[in-house]
Length: 47
Image (cartoon, rainbow, N blue to C red; front, side, top):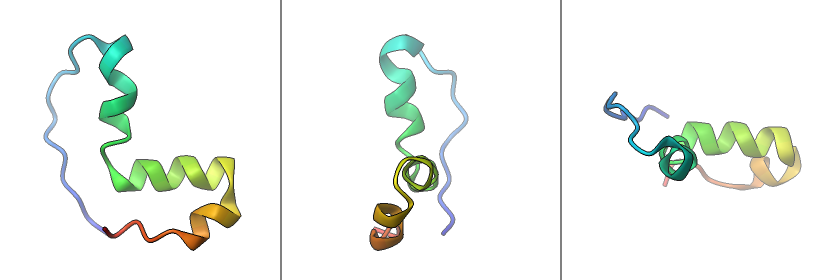
């Protein structure tokens, strides 16, 4: 799974930081693997 996110500065980081980080399927997958591995394994992150 390879997605490219442009490396732009995050403006208003407290408001946009989480949204920017979760824009990447890889980041969402990694977070869910930490929080709930069983759930992460059932989801398709390619879409």
